[in-house]
Length: 626
Image (cartoon, rainbow, N blue to C red; front, side, top):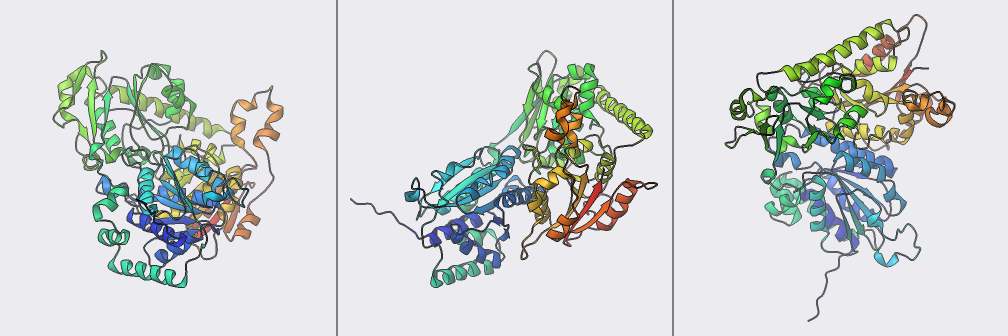
């Protein structure tokens, strides 16, 4: 018996992929122009015209990748208040479309950040047919599906495949971390053969299909009908598999601390309740959700990295560390997590989406755990302020000196941090030339804004800020300094709010292309505060400034460039203002005056100066520190 395989033309394959995106809940697609990916354009553009999805076009694939990264972070941040874990998963992934060849390789920096930052991206990379591989054909990589490393899954779809829809839905599920809890990027490589353009009839029929579905409304029934699948299969394929099967647990010992890093936009209400219920010191980095969630809580330890370095008695008393997110900012924390004598318990980034069970252990390893649910914590109970593990605490009694009523362990940590902060403030008051970069950054942290902090010195200044009212975002997967303008732009587009990006001059120069928004595209509402000290000042504070290697510092590390940003702002269509050092004038006061004219506060329940707005604006404030 002869079996015949159904072969579709490229336009039909692309339409299957578009169906898969919609049925999987993907609503944001970033596109970099290219000919080989043209079938995808003709399939996606009608969906955007009908309001089913939103497309964003960027000329440069590298910038497009980081824009998608920012969009995905923003979507997740908007879903923090979702009622259920399932609803929080829908639409969290962002799709990214490129043509073949080196265009794919230009996605790699953003894909790496997404992988290590657990951000869901679906890179749909168009490719030539397999028969052209190894022939030297133009823009043809021999195995393009292997170009992007550190992906959760990779798929190579043959030309004419009739399975693209189902394969795409599976790829989105992998990106969302379905079944694993670890979101990240996937590469969906699809081979397109000629013709790359649909016929007049094919395009008209596709538009009619899209309009019919769009007219029914953006609901589960319509997207399922559009996909040709039943409601359950379509949603399960999208990564909406019930998370009830997932759970996590922690054991609390005497000498337990919580270390929290960036969680890619996830909330951590469950961890907040855990810390407050058991009086556990929290060592949270600036972009951790716990930084804002514990702003008025007695469990947050200020200047925690310095406490680890300067208070050996407290550091050596740590027996267990509960880790949330990706703490990468300081060496003392890295050293703590690498200590073989310390038990490290890692929680998933989406800790609020799964039940968290709590058990208590005494110094000898014995202890109690809740078997009747009293010690189980989930996102809903945390957000409602319910107590956690009351039964376990009562059973354990006074053996757990740091839990429940006894706050000695927590208070020692907080007091140590407060003492260090107070001493630092006294030192700054007597400095003849205080760090204006630090002062500007701390001023921004004290505002009710969406603050995107660049890597290097900027995020480190925030780690010692005590009055943090801003909602802080950062790329901490690999903590690189590239693509930050594009990422902040994507974040603003997803949040539909203003984002303030505070960035150094070197990081700014790394992503100059991110300043370019094509004429027909939305550029978001982004205010860039660039701290220009003419080079990589962070190296001056590292070991590279030692006397015997100091002669190499300037040329090979700090690399002064002597450039300002006025002309760049003009060239890319951004408003521009500058503040600098002047006799008799405070640079910080000048900056605040400029900032007040450009900032839009966020209406997030905190005290704000003005309500949230969706107005679009792009402005650069250059703070000249030289």
